[in-house]
Length: 386
Image 1 (cartoon, rainbow, N blue to C red):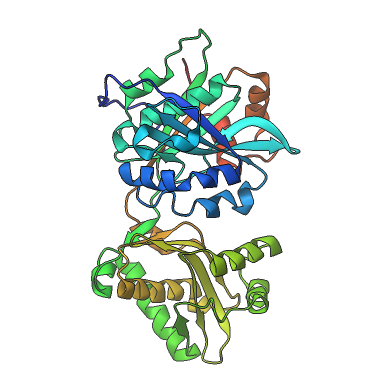
Image 2: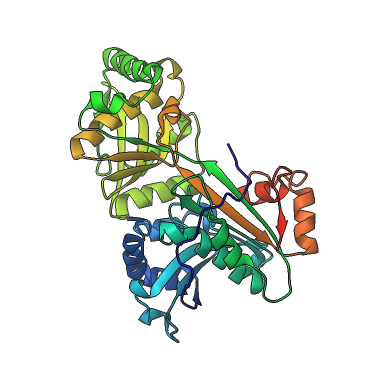
Protein backbone atom coordinates (compact mmCIF):
# COMPACT_ATOMS: atom_id res chain seq x y z
CA UNK A 1 0.00 0.00 0.00
CA UNK A 2 1.26 3.46 -0.91
CA UNK A 3 1.45 6.32 1.56
CA UNK A 4 1.66 9.85 0.21
CA UNK A 5 1.89 11.67 3.51
CA UNK A 6 5.13 13.15 4.85
CA UNK A 7 5.20 11.47 8.23
CA UNK A 8 7.49 13.24 10.71
CA UNK A 9 10.23 12.21 13.09
CA UNK A 10 13.05 14.40 14.44
CA UNK A 11 16.16 14.69 12.29
CA UNK A 12 19.43 13.70 13.90
CA UNK A 13 22.02 16.20 12.78
CA UNK A 14 20.77 19.73 13.42
CA UNK A 15 24.11 21.34 12.43
CA UNK A 16 25.33 19.54 9.33
CA UNK A 17 28.63 20.44 7.69
CA UNK A 18 28.46 22.39 4.41
CA UNK A 19 27.75 20.04 1.52
CA UNK A 20 29.91 19.87 -1.61
CA UNK A 21 28.56 18.04 -4.64
CA UNK A 22 30.69 16.10 -7.10
CA UNK A 23 29.21 14.77 -10.34
CA UNK A 24 30.76 11.87 -12.28
CA UNK A 25 29.29 11.12 -15.71
CA UNK A 26 29.66 7.93 -17.71
CA UNK A 27 30.13 4.24 -16.93
CA UNK A 28 33.93 4.10 -17.14
CA UNK A 29 34.52 7.06 -14.83
CA UNK A 30 31.94 5.80 -12.34
CA UNK A 31 33.56 2.36 -12.21
CA UNK A 32 36.90 3.94 -11.29
CA UNK A 33 35.32 5.10 -8.02
CA UNK A 34 33.84 1.69 -7.16
CA UNK A 35 36.33 0.94 -4.30
CA UNK A 36 35.29 4.15 -2.53
CA UNK A 37 31.60 3.31 -2.99
CA UNK A 38 32.13 -0.17 -1.58
CA UNK A 39 33.76 1.35 1.52
CA UNK A 40 31.01 3.97 1.80
CA UNK A 41 28.29 1.32 1.66
CA UNK A 42 29.93 -0.50 4.57
CA UNK A 43 30.13 2.71 6.61
CA UNK A 44 26.45 3.41 5.88
CA UNK A 45 25.20 -0.04 6.87
CA UNK A 46 24.43 -0.98 3.25
CA UNK A 47 26.93 -3.78 2.84
CA UNK A 48 27.07 -5.00 -0.74
CA UNK A 49 25.22 -2.03 -2.28
CA UNK A 50 28.08 -1.32 -4.70
CA UNK A 51 29.45 -4.85 -5.13
CA UNK A 52 27.91 -5.40 -8.57
CA UNK A 53 28.14 -1.86 -9.86
CA UNK A 54 29.29 -2.93 -13.34
CA UNK A 55 26.37 -5.35 -13.66
CA UNK A 56 23.78 -2.63 -13.11
CA UNK A 57 25.61 -0.04 -15.17
CA UNK A 58 25.54 -2.38 -18.17
CA UNK A 59 21.97 -3.58 -17.70
CA UNK A 60 20.28 -3.70 -21.10
CA UNK A 61 17.44 -1.45 -19.87
CA UNK A 62 19.95 1.22 -18.93
CA UNK A 63 22.21 1.26 -21.98
CA UNK A 64 20.15 3.98 -23.64
CA UNK A 65 20.36 6.16 -20.52
CA UNK A 66 23.20 8.34 -19.24
CA UNK A 67 24.51 7.26 -15.81
CA UNK A 68 25.65 9.82 -13.25
CA UNK A 69 27.22 9.38 -9.84
CA UNK A 70 26.55 12.20 -7.39
CA UNK A 71 28.76 12.39 -4.31
CA UNK A 72 27.84 14.55 -1.32
CA UNK A 73 30.91 15.44 0.72
CA UNK A 74 31.87 17.67 3.63
CA UNK A 75 35.26 18.16 1.98
CA UNK A 76 35.98 20.42 -0.97
CA UNK A 77 38.37 19.04 -3.55
CA UNK A 78 39.25 19.77 -7.15
CA UNK A 79 39.88 16.09 -7.86
CA UNK A 80 37.11 13.59 -7.10
CA UNK A 81 39.68 10.77 -7.00
CA UNK A 82 41.11 12.31 -3.81
CA UNK A 83 37.87 11.79 -1.91
CA UNK A 84 37.66 9.05 0.70
CA UNK A 85 34.57 7.24 1.91
CA UNK A 86 35.03 8.95 5.29
CA UNK A 87 34.66 12.34 3.57
CA UNK A 88 31.24 11.55 2.14
CA UNK A 89 27.76 12.06 3.54
CA UNK A 90 26.20 10.02 0.75
CA UNK A 91 26.12 9.05 -2.91
CA UNK A 92 23.54 8.46 -5.62
CA UNK A 93 23.69 6.45 -8.83
CA UNK A 94 21.12 8.04 -11.11
CA UNK A 95 20.27 7.79 -14.81
CA UNK A 96 19.13 10.42 -17.30
CA UNK A 97 16.61 9.27 -19.88
CA UNK A 98 17.36 10.08 -23.49
CA UNK A 99 15.04 10.86 -26.41
CA UNK A 100 16.48 9.83 -29.78
CA UNK A 101 19.90 9.86 -28.13
CA UNK A 102 19.56 13.35 -26.66
CA UNK A 103 19.44 14.11 -22.89
CA UNK A 104 15.88 14.71 -21.70
CA UNK A 105 16.38 16.25 -18.27
CA UNK A 106 14.45 13.34 -16.70
CA UNK A 107 16.46 11.57 -13.97
CA UNK A 108 15.73 8.43 -11.95
CA UNK A 109 17.69 6.03 -9.74
CA UNK A 110 15.72 3.16 -11.36
CA UNK A 111 16.06 1.19 -8.14
CA UNK A 112 12.74 -0.43 -7.23
CA UNK A 113 13.63 -1.49 -3.68
CA UNK A 114 15.98 1.41 -2.93
CA UNK A 115 18.88 -0.78 -1.84
CA UNK A 116 21.51 0.53 -4.28
CA UNK A 117 20.55 3.86 -5.82
CA UNK A 118 21.12 5.94 -2.69
CA UNK A 119 23.98 5.16 -0.31
CA UNK A 120 23.79 7.11 2.95
CA UNK A 121 23.38 6.43 6.69
CA UNK A 122 19.82 5.42 7.57
CA UNK A 123 19.43 8.43 9.86
CA UNK A 124 20.17 10.95 7.08
CA UNK A 125 19.13 9.00 3.99
CA UNK A 126 15.93 10.99 3.48
CA UNK A 127 17.76 14.29 3.80
CA UNK A 128 20.61 13.28 1.47
CA UNK A 129 18.07 12.04 -1.10
CA UNK A 130 16.18 15.34 -1.01
CA UNK A 131 19.45 17.30 -1.28
CA UNK A 132 20.42 15.35 -4.39
CA UNK A 133 16.99 15.95 -5.93
CA UNK A 134 17.27 19.66 -5.27
CA UNK A 135 20.83 19.90 -6.59
CA UNK A 136 19.86 18.30 -9.91
CA UNK A 137 16.69 20.39 -10.18
CA UNK A 138 18.76 23.56 -9.66
CA UNK A 139 21.17 22.47 -12.39
CA UNK A 140 18.75 21.91 -15.24
CA UNK A 141 16.86 18.69 -14.47
CA UNK A 142 13.18 18.76 -15.38
CA UNK A 143 12.24 15.80 -13.17
CA UNK A 144 14.25 13.92 -10.54
CA UNK A 145 13.05 10.68 -8.98
CA UNK A 146 15.02 8.83 -6.30
CA UNK A 147 14.17 5.73 -4.28
CA UNK A 148 15.83 4.83 -1.00
CA UNK A 149 15.45 2.04 1.53
CA UNK A 150 13.59 3.09 4.68
CA UNK A 151 14.21 1.51 8.08
CA UNK A 152 10.62 2.28 9.14
CA UNK A 153 7.43 3.55 7.56
CA UNK A 154 8.07 7.04 8.88
CA UNK A 155 9.73 9.83 6.93
CA UNK A 156 12.11 12.48 8.27
CA UNK A 157 9.94 15.57 7.69
CA UNK A 158 12.29 18.03 9.39
CA UNK A 159 15.27 16.87 7.36
CA UNK A 160 13.19 16.92 4.20
CA UNK A 161 12.14 20.51 4.95
CA UNK A 162 15.76 21.58 5.51
CA UNK A 163 16.86 20.05 2.23
CA UNK A 164 14.01 21.36 0.10
CA UNK A 165 13.33 24.86 1.44
CA UNK A 166 13.86 27.33 -1.38
CA UNK A 167 16.66 29.88 -1.22
CA UNK A 168 16.54 31.11 -4.80
CA UNK A 169 12.88 32.13 -5.04
CA UNK A 170 12.15 29.38 -7.57
CA UNK A 171 9.51 27.00 -6.33
CA UNK A 172 9.18 23.42 -7.50
CA UNK A 173 6.66 20.62 -7.10
CA UNK A 174 7.61 17.83 -4.67
CA UNK A 175 5.94 14.57 -3.76
CA UNK A 176 6.82 11.61 -1.55
CA UNK A 177 5.41 8.10 -1.40
CA UNK A 178 6.32 5.00 0.57
CA UNK A 179 5.62 1.42 -0.44
CA UNK A 180 6.15 -2.16 0.63
CA UNK A 181 8.79 -3.72 -1.67
CA UNK A 182 9.69 -6.93 0.13
CA UNK A 183 11.22 -9.56 -2.14
CA UNK A 184 13.28 -11.84 0.09
CA UNK A 185 12.93 -14.70 2.53
CA UNK A 186 15.06 -15.62 5.54
CA UNK A 187 17.07 -18.84 5.19
CA UNK A 188 17.33 -20.87 8.39
CA UNK A 189 19.78 -23.55 9.42
CA UNK A 190 17.47 -26.34 8.25
CA UNK A 191 14.69 -26.81 5.71
CA UNK A 192 12.08 -27.05 8.47
CA UNK A 193 13.31 -23.84 10.10
CA UNK A 194 13.17 -22.04 6.75
CA UNK A 195 9.72 -23.33 5.79
CA UNK A 196 8.35 -22.43 9.23
CA UNK A 197 8.25 -18.80 8.10
CA UNK A 198 6.36 -19.66 4.90
CA UNK A 199 2.60 -20.12 4.60
CA UNK A 200 1.14 -23.60 4.98
CA UNK A 201 -0.25 -23.72 1.43
CA UNK A 202 3.13 -22.74 -0.05
CA UNK A 203 4.96 -25.29 2.12
CA UNK A 204 2.63 -27.99 0.84
CA UNK A 205 3.20 -27.01 -2.78
CA UNK A 206 6.99 -26.92 -2.40
CA UNK A 207 6.97 -30.48 -1.10
CA UNK A 208 4.19 -31.90 -3.28
CA UNK A 209 5.45 -30.72 -6.68
CA UNK A 210 9.01 -31.65 -5.89
CA UNK A 211 7.99 -35.24 -5.07
CA UNK A 212 5.87 -35.34 -8.22
CA UNK A 213 8.65 -34.19 -10.57
CA UNK A 214 11.25 -36.40 -8.92
CA UNK A 215 8.95 -39.43 -9.19
CA UNK A 216 7.59 -38.84 -12.71
CA UNK A 217 10.42 -36.99 -14.47
CA UNK A 218 13.43 -38.13 -12.44
CA UNK A 219 14.52 -34.51 -12.17
CA UNK A 220 17.94 -33.63 -10.77
CA UNK A 221 19.06 -30.24 -9.47
CA UNK A 222 22.43 -28.85 -10.61
CA UNK A 223 23.79 -26.08 -8.40
CA UNK A 224 26.25 -24.77 -10.98
CA UNK A 225 25.70 -25.29 -14.71
CA UNK A 226 28.14 -22.68 -15.98
CA UNK A 227 30.71 -25.21 -17.15
CA UNK A 228 28.05 -27.38 -18.82
CA UNK A 229 25.56 -24.94 -20.31
CA UNK A 230 26.32 -23.94 -23.89
CA UNK A 231 24.76 -21.06 -25.76
CA UNK A 232 22.99 -23.59 -28.01
CA UNK A 233 21.32 -25.26 -24.99
CA UNK A 234 20.47 -21.85 -23.56
CA UNK A 235 18.80 -20.82 -26.83
CA UNK A 236 16.89 -24.09 -27.05
CA UNK A 237 15.38 -23.68 -23.58
CA UNK A 238 14.58 -20.04 -24.28
CA UNK A 239 12.74 -20.96 -27.49
CA UNK A 240 10.58 -23.42 -25.52
CA UNK A 241 10.22 -21.26 -22.41
CA UNK A 242 6.97 -19.94 -21.00
CA UNK A 243 8.40 -16.39 -21.13
CA UNK A 244 11.16 -16.24 -23.78
CA UNK A 245 13.50 -13.24 -23.89
CA UNK A 246 15.23 -11.48 -26.78
CA UNK A 247 18.55 -12.67 -28.17
CA UNK A 248 20.36 -9.63 -26.72
CA UNK A 249 19.06 -10.33 -23.22
CA UNK A 250 19.96 -14.01 -23.59
CA UNK A 251 23.52 -13.16 -24.66
CA UNK A 252 23.99 -10.78 -21.75
CA UNK A 253 22.79 -13.37 -19.24
CA UNK A 254 25.17 -15.94 -20.71
CA UNK A 255 28.10 -13.51 -20.66
CA UNK A 256 27.41 -12.38 -17.08
CA UNK A 257 27.11 -15.88 -15.66
CA UNK A 258 30.44 -16.89 -17.21
CA UNK A 259 32.48 -13.79 -16.49
CA UNK A 260 31.23 -11.91 -13.44
CA UNK A 261 32.64 -12.90 -10.06
CA UNK A 262 29.87 -13.91 -7.66
CA UNK A 263 27.41 -14.90 -10.39
CA UNK A 264 25.89 -18.36 -10.69
CA UNK A 265 23.46 -20.36 -12.80
CA UNK A 266 21.56 -23.35 -11.41
CA UNK A 267 18.86 -25.52 -12.90
CA UNK A 268 16.98 -28.78 -13.26
CA UNK A 269 17.40 -31.59 -15.75
CA UNK A 270 15.10 -34.58 -16.22
CA UNK A 271 16.26 -38.18 -15.99
CA UNK A 272 16.59 -38.05 -19.78
CA UNK A 273 19.01 -35.11 -19.48
CA UNK A 274 16.55 -32.53 -20.80
CA UNK A 275 16.97 -29.05 -19.34
CA UNK A 276 13.62 -27.86 -17.97
CA UNK A 277 14.49 -24.91 -15.70
CA UNK A 278 17.26 -22.38 -15.15
CA UNK A 279 17.76 -19.49 -12.79
CA UNK A 280 20.62 -17.06 -12.45
CA UNK A 281 21.79 -14.47 -10.01
CA UNK A 282 24.51 -13.26 -7.68
CA UNK A 283 25.89 -14.27 -4.28
CA UNK A 284 27.65 -12.02 -1.79
CA UNK A 285 27.73 -11.38 1.98
CA UNK A 286 25.50 -14.38 2.85
CA UNK A 287 22.89 -13.02 0.43
CA UNK A 288 21.73 -14.68 -2.78
CA UNK A 289 19.88 -12.54 -5.33
CA UNK A 290 17.91 -14.15 -8.15
CA UNK A 291 17.84 -11.99 -11.27
CA UNK A 292 15.96 -14.25 -13.66
CA UNK A 293 14.32 -17.65 -14.07
CA UNK A 294 13.45 -19.57 -17.22
CA UNK A 295 11.06 -22.56 -17.29
CA UNK A 296 10.23 -24.92 -20.16
CA UNK A 297 6.64 -24.65 -21.35
CA UNK A 298 4.13 -27.50 -21.45
CA UNK A 299 4.88 -28.64 -17.90
CA UNK A 300 2.35 -26.62 -15.93
CA UNK A 301 1.05 -29.66 -14.04
CA UNK A 302 4.50 -29.97 -12.44
CA UNK A 303 4.79 -26.30 -11.40
CA UNK A 304 8.44 -26.30 -12.44
CA UNK A 305 9.11 -22.83 -11.01
CA UNK A 306 8.01 -23.99 -7.57
CA UNK A 307 10.14 -27.13 -7.81
CA UNK A 308 13.23 -25.12 -8.78
CA UNK A 309 12.78 -22.84 -5.78
CA UNK A 310 12.40 -25.85 -3.48
CA UNK A 311 15.74 -27.24 -4.67
CA UNK A 312 17.32 -23.79 -4.51
CA UNK A 313 16.26 -23.18 -0.90
CA UNK A 314 17.75 -26.53 0.10
CA UNK A 315 21.00 -25.67 -1.66
CA UNK A 316 21.18 -22.20 -0.06
CA UNK A 317 20.83 -23.79 3.38
CA UNK A 318 23.81 -26.05 2.63
CA UNK A 319 26.10 -23.14 1.69
CA UNK A 320 25.08 -20.96 4.66
CA UNK A 321 22.99 -18.29 2.93
CA UNK A 322 21.07 -16.07 5.35
CA UNK A 323 18.72 -14.32 2.93
CA UNK A 324 17.35 -15.23 -0.50
CA UNK A 325 16.11 -12.33 -2.62
CA UNK A 326 14.04 -12.52 -5.80
CA UNK A 327 14.68 -9.49 -8.00
CA UNK A 328 13.56 -11.19 -11.19
CA UNK A 329 11.78 -14.29 -12.39
CA UNK A 330 8.19 -15.44 -12.64
CA UNK A 331 5.60 -14.51 -10.00
CA UNK A 332 5.20 -17.11 -7.28
CA UNK A 333 3.41 -17.75 -3.98
CA UNK A 334 6.59 -17.11 -1.96
CA UNK A 335 5.76 -13.40 -2.30
CA UNK A 336 3.24 -13.84 0.51
CA UNK A 337 6.11 -14.85 2.80
CA UNK A 338 8.56 -12.08 1.93
CA UNK A 339 10.28 -10.21 4.73
CA UNK A 340 8.84 -6.69 5.22
CA UNK A 341 10.84 -3.99 3.45
CA UNK A 342 9.96 -0.34 2.90
CA UNK A 343 11.09 2.01 0.16
CA UNK A 344 10.49 5.75 -0.13
CA UNK A 345 10.29 7.66 -3.41
CA UNK A 346 10.97 11.39 -3.66
CA UNK A 347 10.08 13.18 -6.88
CA UNK A 348 10.72 16.82 -7.70
CA UNK A 349 9.66 18.50 -10.94
CA UNK A 350 10.31 21.98 -12.20
CA UNK A 351 7.43 24.09 -13.48
CA UNK A 352 8.11 23.10 -17.07
CA UNK A 353 5.56 22.88 -19.93
CA UNK A 354 7.27 19.71 -21.22
CA UNK A 355 6.69 17.96 -17.89
CA UNK A 356 3.05 19.08 -17.85
CA UNK A 357 2.60 17.49 -21.29
CA UNK A 358 4.27 14.28 -20.11
CA UNK A 359 1.87 14.04 -17.17
CA UNK A 360 -1.08 14.53 -19.47
CA UNK A 361 -0.06 12.10 -22.22
CA UNK A 362 1.66 9.32 -20.20
CA UNK A 363 -1.26 6.91 -20.67
CA UNK A 364 -2.13 7.79 -24.31
CA UNK A 365 1.55 7.44 -25.29
CA UNK A 366 1.80 4.13 -23.36
CA UNK A 367 4.60 5.40 -21.14
CA UNK A 368 2.92 4.12 -17.96
CA UNK A 369 5.07 0.95 -17.84
CA UNK A 370 7.92 3.15 -16.61
CA UNK A 371 7.68 3.85 -12.88
CA UNK A 372 8.89 7.43 -13.29
CA UNK A 373 6.05 8.21 -15.70
CA UNK A 374 3.57 6.25 -13.57
CA UNK A 375 4.43 8.51 -10.66
CA UNK A 376 4.14 11.70 -12.70
CA UNK A 377 0.68 10.71 -13.93
CA UNK A 378 -0.63 9.29 -10.63
CA UNK A 379 -3.71 11.36 -9.67
CA UNK A 380 -3.58 10.08 -6.08
CA UNK A 381 -0.26 11.71 -5.21
CA UNK A 382 -0.13 14.94 -3.24
CA UNK A 383 2.25 17.47 -4.75
CA UNK A 384 3.68 20.26 -2.59
CA UNK A 385 4.93 23.55 -4.07
CA UNK A 386 8.11 24.47 -2.19
